[in-house]
Image (cartoon, rainbow, N blue to C red; front, side):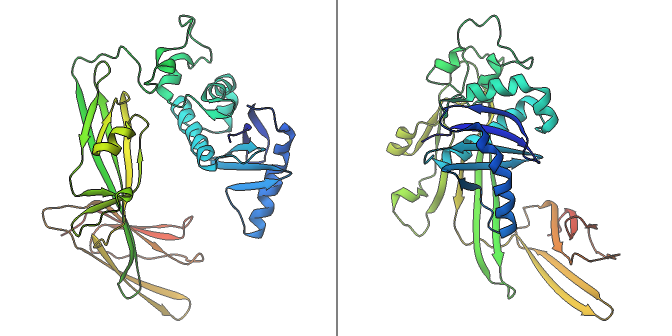
Length: 349
């Protein structure tokens, strides 16, 4: 099932704007949201999904706002949360900053966006570039568009027709981050690589692109295991990818959106050697004095470099007047986060 209504609230629970999609819930139910949220928070049992009076609240918090979905039925939670985050993403591209003031100042355009992005509670047009064709910054539809833009009714809703460039270019970036947990003895307890393929596309017309993957790349569904294979998990593609083609021959075939977008994301659950190894020694002295000695050494190859490295060191909440001494980089105390941040512009090999 889908969402019945969407509400945008301020931090005090006051409704800034709402859209009732299905008419099967009382709009006054939203008054129960903030008290229920505070009750769960006091109990230490806060979850992104709250239930009361036969309805379900699913919400996300952004800046000083709550974006809340209300559903009477058993809604698809994954779809609803994805839609809520998409609302934030689209409005960020319209207003840059989404805050209480920007919602009030752009009330008409926000209501139009909520109206166009969902049909009877089901996500419909969620690509900001398509929405911007007929929902303008002035908050009214273009008078020169007597019918919906082709992209809305076209099979390729994420790309407009008639795009032209003098020079056709495609840029592809593979961005990976390492998440690693080590014990006090130095043993790696858990490690994974989270990656994404991001593209910038400046091509004319309706081009079809194909991207092939290395034969060593496997996916969860294959069930095949090879000692030298790389198994990707939690793979998520952009909606432009032809999944049927990918299932058949593992070729990523797609008509890309114009501009910048994320083609796919993935997770690699494998043993990873830490690129930078951190050692810490903590000595507690008299008169509530604590001394930290932090050592860091690189474990990557000499031909690689690590720039803009930050080592975050947690300190007690009552820390006062810290003093620093470092052989490389600089250290600053961030009291609002109760941490020391050791910044190294170029990490020595």
